[in-house]
Image 1: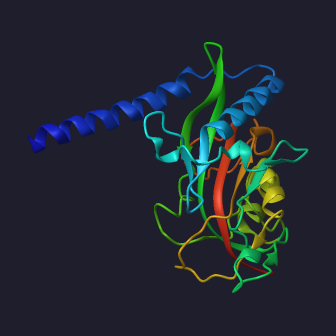
Image 2: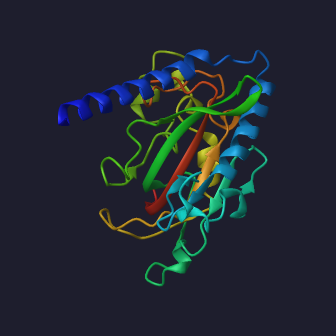
Length: 251
C-alpha cells in the first residue's frame, strides 16, 4: 500500500512538472511589448485579488474550499502602492521596524547598501490563455527562496547592486551586455526596496515578513539579455518578492 501511494505521489509530481513545462511551451510572446505590459498589469491585479498575507506575512492563495482564510484581506486591500515604473509594493501593517521597539525606528536603505534579506522570490509569465489573462508558470527564483531552503538571509544579491568598477562579473565580462550593471540589476526591485526600512536582526532570528514587491517585466529585464541567476530565462517575467530586510550596512 505504501509503495502504491509513493507511485501515485511521484506520478502527480511528474504531472505538475510537465504541466509547468507545458505552460511555458504554450506561452506565445506578443510581438508588441506593450501587449506584454498589459498582460503583466492585468495578471498582477488578479494575483493581488487571489492572495493574502498570513500571520507571518507569507503570501498565500485563498482556498475555494477551506473557510480558515475567509477573514484575511486580499493583497489588493492592503494599500498597495504603484510606482511610475509599474512596480507595486505593499508594507505589511505592524511589521515594520518602527513597530518593534527593540529596533525602532529602522534604518533607511541606501541604493548601494549591503543587504541581508529573508525572502521568497518567484517569477511568473503574464499570458493570454484562450482569452483569460493571468499568470502562468509560477517558478522559484532558484537560490533566493531562503525561507523554505537555507533559513538564512540572502546577502548582497547582485540583482540589488553590483559595483561597475570592481566586480569581476563586469570587469572580466566578455560581452558588451555583461559589462553593463543593467545586465544584473532588477531595477524595479532596487527602486521599491528603498521604500522600506531595515531591521537590525541577526541571522537565524525568527522572520516576520514586512512586505511584498511585485516587479512587472518592463521594470525587470523585459526582453533584454540578463545574467543567468536561476538556470532559466527571465524574459518577459514578472518578479514577486515576499521579504524582511534583516539588516543593512554601508558598502
